[in-house]
Image 1 (spheres, one colour):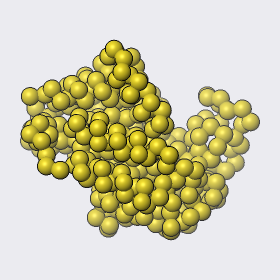
Image 2 (cartoon, rainbow, N blue to C red):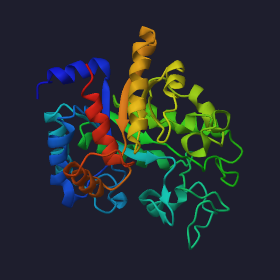
Image 3 (cartoon, rainbow, N blue to C red):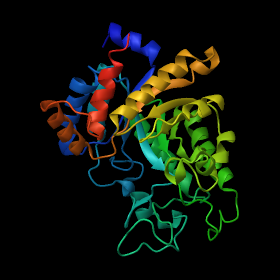
Length: 352
């Protein structure tokens, strides 16, 4: 599809206008494709990150196929819609951290429990946070010798299905890393371990001609900045910011305040995208900040401020149901991802 005049204009003002959403279930695929055509495209969204993890019918590792897995033909429908609407689509498998959720291990650790960084930590019968073991989500051991050949095969297969020249590796909220009881990681520098995993995945993607995207929270110092252990690191991985390739794209998420850490990443030499979630006023402030960073920086710095990404963090069918319901009612600024999406992108599309 030919780019509209408005889209071309926005490409100069805000090069990346992204939308991040969970992969749809097969039964909701047609509704998702309709959403791409009728909602994302008219709002001039030009990038979509699909959080798919192991919900794909892998040929290389069928043992890793998770529930509600999409087929290659299912993904082709998504890719076709995105191509028609000039939307770059990027798949994500959340790597390193987020290998479990509450009482349930993710598919990788279900199938390969030997990859668990902290196998000695027992999941409680009743999960609560906080807990004595600081168990939020498990991590895999980045130094396990059998890990990466498997990861690389599923990453390649997924990127090929999505016809994507980029891959989002997640790597957010890593609480378990360099566990002292791990025979491989114990005693090692946590920043070096984190950076080493980024470089290992980056090198593979680079060899295949693909770009690497990650969330940026583990590269921020949570104590010095006051950002805390969720939006930033309390376990010293933040020093990895000086140990990873500068052409990794950083997705810098802040949901309740428009913290201006995009400047930090840009000064370090990274391209950066600011990522809101559910607070429309915060999202608008973040867009304004990104525009100011681009307008008030040197030419070298300007090109590192890529744009904005709306995140959703809910099942796709739930998001779509609430989004369409909200469109039928009087517009409001309630704090949720569907309001944030529509309000923020409507504001962006009024830019001159």
